[in-house]
Amino acid sequence: MNKIFNKIGLFLALTLVILWSCDNEYEIPGTGTNHVYATTSFGDVENKLQVNSVMSFIDLSRGVDGRTWTFTEDALDENGVNITASTESVVKVQFTKAGVHGIVLKQTFADNVWVGETQKQSNAYDSIINVTVLDSVKASFDAVQIKEATALVNADNALNEVFAGREIQFTQTSAELMGADKFVWKFTKHGGATIEYDGADLTAKFSSVGVYDAMLIASNEFSRDTISYDSYLSIVASTDPVELLGLTVDGALKVRFGRDMGYPTTCDPTSFTVMVTNNGIAIPVSVTGLSLDATDNSIVILALSGELFNSDVVTISYDATVGDLITSDGMLSDSFTDEKVIFITDNVLAASAYDYGFETSATEDWKYLWWGAPWDKYTFEVSTAQFYSGKNSGYVAMEPGGGMIMGLKTAPPAFVTFTTKANTEYEISCWIYMESIGDRASTPDLRCYWSAKVDWSVEGAFFTPEFEEGKWVYTSWRVNSPGAGEYGFQLRGNNQGNSEACSFYFDEMSMSVVEPRK
Image (tube, rainbow, N blue to C red; front, side):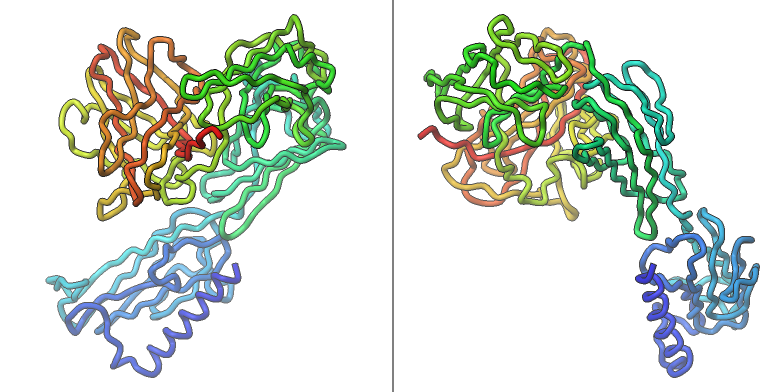
C-alpha cells in the first residue's frame, strides 16, 4: 500500500510542477493546438487499486475550454465526501466498492481537437478511463473427499474423518473481484510437522494418521488474509490396499508409498529383486537393508550392494510372501513387479527461460512451425484441467491422421533456448497423461527435435497400444547433443497412422546429462 501512495505522491508533485511552473512549455504528445491528454496517477501502469485507496485523475490536455469528470456513485473525494462530477484538472478520488469502474471525461476545445496523430472534425471529445477496484482479500475454501464425494465441514474441531492415503480436493472460493492471485496451504499435524503447498486448488493425500490443523493464506499485491481451522482433519487407519507411488534415485534409492510405513528394518532384504542393465550389460546389485526416511515416513530407503548411475536402466520387484512391509496403520504391502526407477537429476531446462512446466507461458507462446499438412492438424493449449505439478500442463489434441509441430518462441519469433554441451548424451523426459490414445492399432508419438542441426532419428515418447490412459505416466528417452551452443525444441507429434484422435497432457519436461557408468 505504501508503494502505491508513494507513486501517487511523486506523480502529483511532478504534475503540480508542470501545471504551475511550465504550463506553456510542456509538450503534449502529438500535434495540434488543441490536444487530448488525460491520465491517472498510475501513469502507464494498469489502473488497479484496492477498495478505499486514493488515486488521481489528471487532465493535461492542451486548449481545453471546459471539462467534466463523471464518477461512479461509490466515489468519494479526498475529504471523504461523495463526488459524482468535477470540472477540476486534477481530482483525487477513492472508490468504496469493488468492480471495474468506467470514469468519463467530457471535454470541449476552442477548435477541432487532436487525438493522438488524428484531428477530429469536432471540438468535443469524450474519454473513458477504466479502473479495476479490488475488494480486500478474504480467504475461504471448500474441501471434498474425492472417493466418497462428500464435503468436509469447515469449522474448528470439525475432525473431518478421512482414511489415510485418500484424496481430498481443496478449492479456494474467494470472490473474483477480491483479486487474490497467490495461495499458500498449510496443514500441521498435532505433534508433528507442517506440510505446505502452493496454488489456488489442491488435491492432497495425507499419509500419516493423526489430527491436522488447516490454513489457507490468500493474497495479492495489496492485501492478504488467512483462514484457519484447528483440529480440521482426523486422518484414520485405512484398510485400503497400500498404494505404491513410485521409485526414485535422489541421493538414495527411495520407495514411496501412499501411507506412512512401519519401521522396515526387520523386512527381509531378499524380498527385493533389483535388475540393473547398462548398454545391455547386466550389473549385479542387491538390496542389503531397509530404513525409513527420517523426514517422510511414507518413504522406505533401500541400501544397495553397488552404486547406481542415471545411465542405468533399473527395475525393482518386491515379493510380499518373503517380505513384511507394513504401514503404520497395519496394512501389509502387496507384491509389485518390474517397477521402473526414476533418477532425479539436475534439469538443464531449469537454468534457462524454457517453460518446461507450462507455468509461465501462455498458449500463444507455443507457435506452429509451418511444416504444412499433416503437421497442422492439431490443437494445443496451456491447460489447468490436469497437471502433474504446479497448476498447468500442455494439452495436445491431434486429429485422426494428423500431427503437430510447434516450438516455444518469444516475440519477435525466436526459439526459447537452453545451453547444450558438445559430445554429451542427454536424457529427455516428461510426464504424460493420456486422455485418448485412439484406435490402438497404431503408435502415435511425441519427439523433441533440436531447433537447429536436427537429428531426425531421435527417439521419443511412443504411445503403444499398452500405454495407459487416465493416469500420469513417466516417459524418457536419450538423445545426443547437437554440439555446444544455444538450442530450443521443435516438438513434433505424429498421429498419421491413427484413425482416431490422440489427445494427452504433458508436464514437467526435463533434460539431464547422462552419467556414464564408472
